[in-house]
Amino acid sequence: MVNAFYLLQELGHYFRHFIFSEPLLKILILTPAFWIEFPWYVLMCLTAVFYRLRLRRARPPEVHPPLGIIVTAFREPPGDILKNLRTLIHQDYPGRIEIVLVFDTRREASIFKGLELPPGRSLRVVTKQYRGGRASSLNLGLKLLSKDIEIVLAVDADTSLDYDALRLLVRPFADPRVVAVSGNIKVRNARESLWTRFQHIEYVISITLARLMLSLLFGTVNNISGAYGAFRRRFLELVYGWDSGTAEDLDLTSRLKIVAATYPGARLAFVPESNARTSVPATLSGLLRQRQRWDGDLVWIFFKKYRRFLVPAFPNWREFFLFLDMNLLLQFVMPVAMLVYNVYLWLNYGLVGLLVVNVFIFVIYVCWTILMYAVYLLTLSQEVSYDLPFLFYTVVYPAYNWLLRVHALKAYLDDWCGDLHKYSSYVPRWVSRKLPF
Image (cartoon, rainbow, N blue to C red):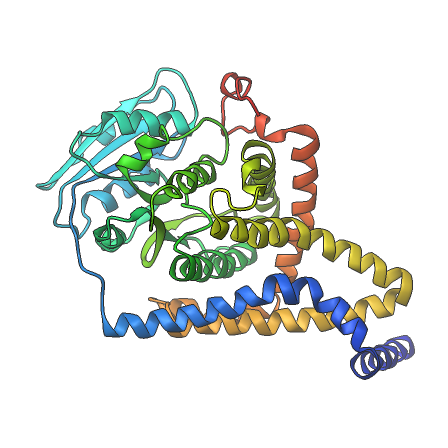
């Protein structure tokens, strides 16, 4: 008890000294987050409110072009694939829907061919004799679609869609300048564990709020998710479809941005009301394995395959600025700055000083997380009663976020030094050995 009381006294002393006597230290502490991260939080909150108010005044026009949907499957359970197909077949969409289900392996597929199809729906099931990776399945599906299909969707086999998802997703294509549209990804198993609850909050902030802000303010998005996204077929064919390797969704998004930069006014859009639901890792080990691949792919895409994004004004100044801030600084510099600064505090102010400063920063992050999630509940949530209990977990969410940032440093170093993206189980070895990067 004495030691605990003494520690609390020391913490109070350091905190008072920190707040009132060291303004320079406060600036040093807040500099990485204050100039790199917090401005995006402000913009995310403001654009969500603006979008809500604008949506009440006017809705975009509805269009119903024929849709081609490529569903890629590998070893997903038959029940998950059937659920996916049923949500696609029975969409509340008046236009024609053509579905191509591509298995990236030899597999018994007769169960999927016997589905009863309503009018205006067609399903073709293809089983590949040799595994070539998800990119090859998508390219095969693109070739098999009818020639009159102008809008192409890529959907994972274990992803299910809300029944009005497609009708909402294609609305931005009424504007001929729209190249691609990202749908909203929601966590299906959000209540399964503590880690899935954190990922639910993460998806709300990094997908729903962040992509809405990028779409409204800059006419782009950071990524068209491979699990659920729509593309204008003409542009897909201009970039020769999907490229082999991991992170095929981020790779395609990067190439679409390069091509779109040559078309005045071309843009990428995001529709927060068009929901697809996917399962996320329920354990810490599964989560870290997933992020090892995701974070390592960032190094491969941005620093090995598309170094041209490091050149100012290529593909344009807007994309260069977003890459510099949201990718280079936020994804790579922030984790390093956080680690270096904590070492600096420990060496100069001791363990108690390090603890006090981190508690102060943690409280700031908690306040921001609560504010952003509350804005989401008030403006964008379509299931407030379901989403509301997760607000309780926002008070510890920053600790989860810091854990992932520290782990991201490991993933960056692993891929930078060892090219681990070439050994991903998501790409066959015979394919990855032929990759030029």
